[in-house]
Length: 372
Image (cartoon, rainbow, N blue to C red; front, side, top):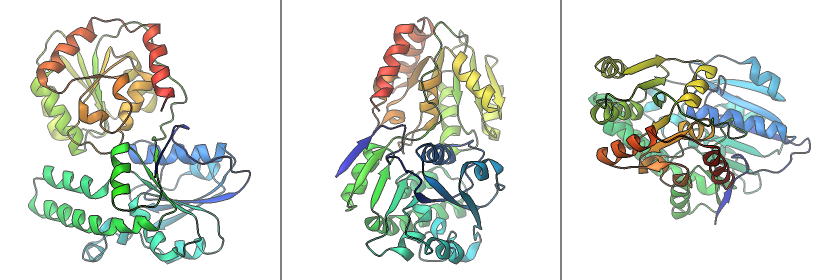
């Protein structure tokens, strides 16, 4: 049974002082990329609802965070066991590298419900499953589809082989989700997949994103914005598409903004005098860039999950021009202008560039997003 919930991305009722364990694949602070943004604001919502959150984080590349200590009842950190030995195991590397006896011992000390953030953390589900313990799993993607997409884009042979092998392992391993009390899918497409494999209860839960209300500004902006993590292959390909088909439209000023720009992104921007790159903007700077753009343009070739950059553009920005894959499996197409060919995208961009964003547009946006 697939259920849809629209409570700012969180499906649980008031906690009334009850404990809940949240196990996270990484340290969710700072909340500066898609996956951890979803986790951080879900944890924050839990606390607001009166749950006592016991947060468990695997560490690799991110430091312990006082922000999490201040938010949660307690925070525990576990070293992720990276290295080639775990790559050779039958279980997926993203799971095998997050096995922790210390974590399991802590979880066995009580019977509080557990929220596992991603298939990554489902070693816990394997080890603790007894048919009685409440264990929710937030599925951030259909992981084997995500890894197939990574393999398709990877140029290095050894790395492509790793992604393909991991995808095959993940396809087999996702049967563990049949043991979950509920699987929280991020889109209707993902939910349908989890139903097909036999999960007993699946719920569509929109991503938590830290936008309590629509703050879009009326009027006109002076540039077209693309934003995202500019080191990720999916986003590099998006910039490549824009460079091939939109940046050549000299009557528009473009801004490309985001974390850690890939060398290709830098080269593509430098070829066009009407395009400006903003690397590693602060949260406030990114909000300002989104809010003051005339058009937020967002394209993808990978229909996995709901893109948090799309949610930010809709809650904070003016016109949003997207391709169909960006809104696939979500109810958000109505809030965007959708175009799927370069010619259609150029035509819609010309129209939106000359169309003021009105208070009526803002009220319509609010109504659409309120429906979840």
